[in-house]
Length: 178
Ligand code: PRP
Image (cartoon, rainbow, N blue to C red; front, side, top):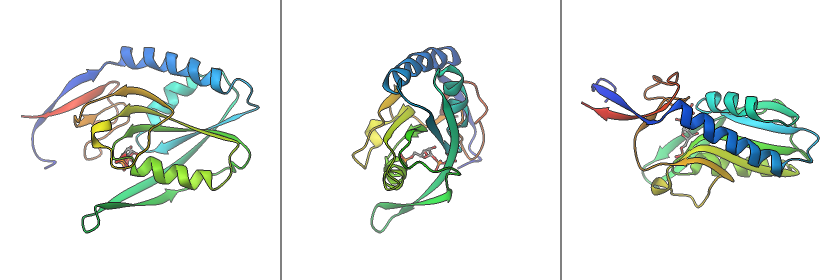
């Protein structure tokens, strides 16, 4: 499949992403205006570009941490096993936490990560996803803030890969096989 030739159409431009991030940052600032320090947790690898731009726009005292999860499909049970490949460096008990995700698809990853983080008793736990594909959802979950709802396109860029390529595109593109 990775050998199939394809082209990438711009779905969401860098300019539109930047404008939406400004709006989202204002909403996050309002929600956490009384925080001593917000722990912003990026889910690796796809969120690295989004978290970098969001943090530069966010006028709050922050601490940055990362978590890496990986999910494997199980065709027998149509369920998913989510494994933590890299855990947080810091403690989040009693802290304000914002989880930053690039995309919510089936919802398995976010749901698993949120259960894990909730078990550590944060004071407040909110989530932001740049993209949301509600038509693909299998777990009833949604992020507190969503950048863009998109149809079931195969997307790349702005951190998101296709076979580990295209993460460095400054925009969100849709893959079109040629
Ligand atoms: C992708 C994406 C989300 C997750 C969403 O991660 O970054 O974390 O899948 O899918 P879900 O809602 O169906 O669980 P991936 O496992 O491809 O890793 P990556 O971020 O390192 O590319």
